[in-house]
Length: 128
Image (tube, rainbow, N blue to C red; front, side, top):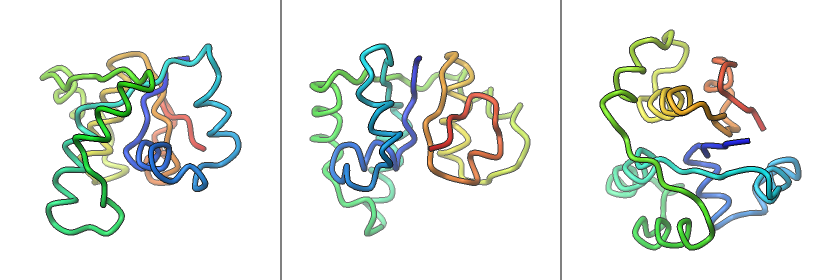
């Protein structure tokens, strides 16, 4: 299965794995699953780090380097992904989460998330 990790799942996998549920850890370590991160997540981290969010205290340069080194594939954000946001019902207003969901749908992936608001979308979402 192709899994696009929501930003909080990325942060926990990289720096606080104890916050991940057992089922999430299993999904992240199954060899048949391909793990992806979006450039939108790195963008979100840079922005939220810049405004002083306590839950985003991570070096985004190091995070990206370590994700790639550990086999995560990076996905660029394209205009197609941005346009796909327009087709989403307004169940959740966070622009980063909406872009990640559109990204997952465009690429035929499951967005791995623990965010109940994102989970409302159901299609292309794997709630953990």
